[in-house]
Length: 149
Length: 102
Image 1 (cartoon, each protein chain N blue to C red):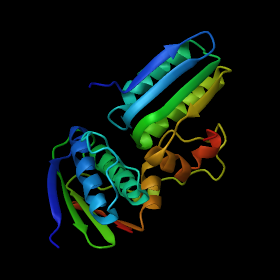
Image 2: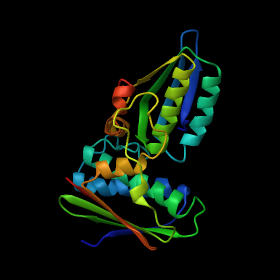
Image 3: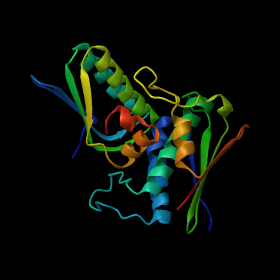
Image 4: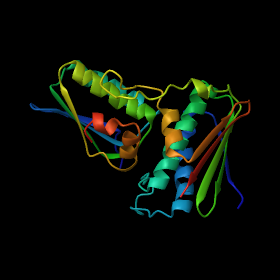
């Protein structure tokens, strides 16, 4: 199956567009029902597979815009989505600064009031939601996200 | 119909913050400003209704953590209600469902 391809400026204003396309791509694999067909603007991310894919993708998109392009754009985010019967793979390529994924802190073991994090959760969300997540620094930098149904 | 990201209703007993749609890296800064206004009034009880919240990301979670910490620091209590679907899954993944009593 040929991948679904999308190229977007590396800016947050294109995030919602990308998230909607990824949500619908996830639905191709999960075959989840649309709860309200009369509301095309509802996000309707309820199925666990769709939830995992959309949550992870959104965090990686954020990461590229913020860390690779420093919120200033200046380059593209190239997205390739491959769907099969039981798997969805998303590759995101950017041409910005490489990200040091090894320096992302772990979540605290015990979450009391003082330890509640106010940042640094995105990579943890993406990694935990997916079956596989790899990152190859460049540039070009390549994120590969894989979720199996 | 146009809907707003959030609305706030104050009464004698509580401050009710209702958040809708997608609370994310684009919308969280807007809510954070409202959170600053809410917390400045040192409310004894804040109810944050997430029943109409469809999507959240780590920036949205950070905004709600900020609200939780600020309300508690001023001696108040925060109750988060109605959490469902993707936002609930994210809170559970981060183990914040226990902190927020979801």
